[in-house]
Image 1 (tube, rainbow, N blue to C red):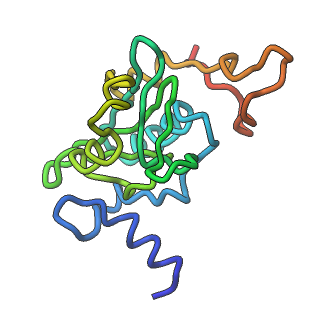
Image 2 (cartoon, rainbow, N blue to C red; image 1 turned 180 degrees about the horizontal axis):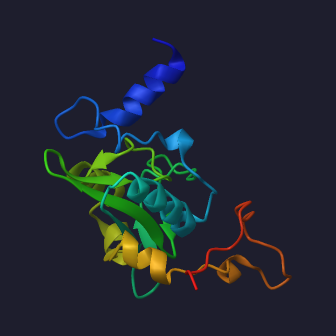
Length: 177
């Protein structure tokens, strides 16, 4: 098996019982629209893609009152366990009758997709750091997201007018109408 096919097989092995996913759920991470530090837009694009294939999906915002949430196993981290403290993080959830809930996190080093229990135990830990930066979750159905989500990317602009991270190449997202 070539390295590309091995990576593809590994990405599709997040199924709770092992094996491949139905074709409409087997999105390879490398095929997804992705811009580092723009997780809400990445998930918006992923939800659009999955919804076009008839998949009912949810966008899940992870944050807290202090806007400091600890998420482990993040690919952009330089920490040994992949710890990042984000102001917020956004993931996609899909319920699959035979597999339970699958998590699609474009920023994780965990399998893509990953079963909910495995994702929660890998991405969120117990202990002092976890208590200080505990997550709160907010789910939004994709169809609601499409009708109301807007991102002008202003939260990523520094006082000098430059971006804190390069923005996506596509235009800002606005709701229809």
